[in-house]
Length: 108
Image 1 (cartoon, rainbow, N blue to C red):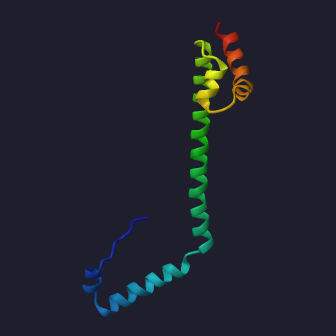
Image 2: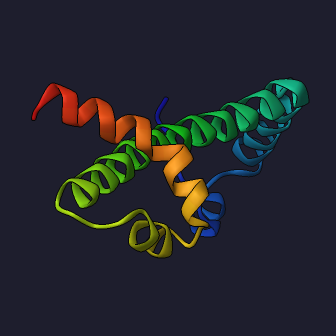
Image 3: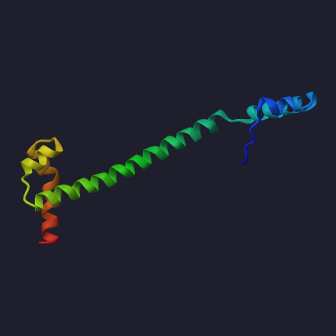
């Protein structure tokens, strides 16, 4: 859809009859707008943003898992890893120990 920008000067260059026709067409277009369709379009944008953020979080989560496994593999203790994550040692171990063990088993 092409959008024409009408400035005050453009309206000034129109005859009274052209201005009235322009205003009538604009009012018709405004009346034809469906408020629920506009709201739905707004919500689609919100939902797309949620999806994009969710995808980013998934990606960041995988990067974090990889970083934790790599740190543990390189000899960092669960206490050090937990400190870097800002969580308790038990929480870090519970959350990431299985990943570290699987990684170790797959690539000794």
